[in-house]
Image (tube, rainbow, N blue to C red; front, side, top):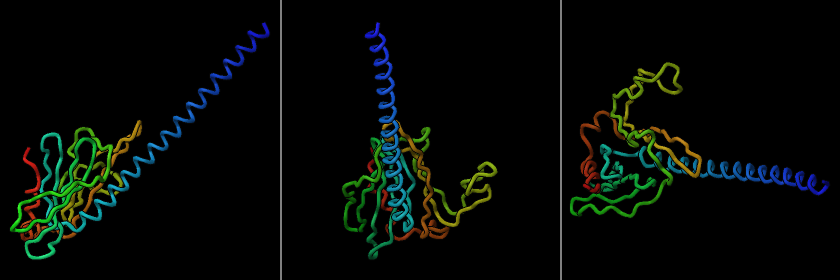
Length: 205
């Protein structure tokens, strides 16, 4: 009887210890995954903010096959010489490639550099959206929504990114708007020479 009682007590103690160990491990893993997801988001924000604020033209985003694309131009380094950037979401990876548009060369997009991994669409919403100067993107915003108002109208072109970053069991939303300070209403009508050609680096299928 003593052996049986001791065995039963040891079994219960073992179950408690194993359960606690699993819970601790699970909590630690979740914290690690959350940290990775946050790092992905922070990297995405800093990189996109640094690039898009100086854009002189933004092409309308488009889905090609299963990939999402959006291209934008940076200020020309010489007449007709325009640095182009191409953002792409493919197989859970957000990447950015670059190439230089000139009047004498065929567009050849450079190798893509990864910005974030574990990227998934948010409720099947388009991940890229462009707001022209004068748009009212928050016209339908609910009263009391932080940082926006139904009457807000932007002075410059803005690009909104909406997706999720997933790592393991942790999924975090990414929803940020970046303002292109070189693109006002007049700049939309008269794009710099060659700036709109950045879309030529986008595949057709």
